[in-house]
Length: 189
Image 1: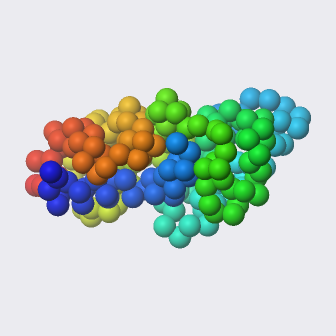
Image 2: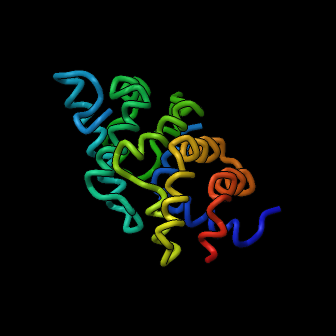
């Protein structure tokens, strides 16, 4: 059983994932887009632009336009590029509609893909520790250093795997608190 402080802390850390988690829940590169050229590059851009626009349209979105674009490109690449999306009947317009367009397709979002997607956030300049701390208020430099050391890409990837598996809060709490446990005394002080 989790305590209220654990749930609150986990919610603060997971809150930045909310816009992205909606996309993942229905699923069971770099700034230049996924590999390819010509029509493939144009198609990748169309998907990425539509998905990034959906992220940035959300008033709760914590990402800059550049970060949203990067995350969108990473997602498109991880899903197999525009060819895989087109073959599944998903169009860029489907992303723009705000619902998860992948839920009604045969595309699967595996745990390996979820882990890779979680790791992509740091490649896009998104630091979950900074987003987490914004919700907490004033935190010492020592606590920040500890959190940055503990919240690795692997931990964020594990969080995405649990979100992808639609695990309960206890499982997510366990991952978060296993990671940040060494920092709790610094956060309390």
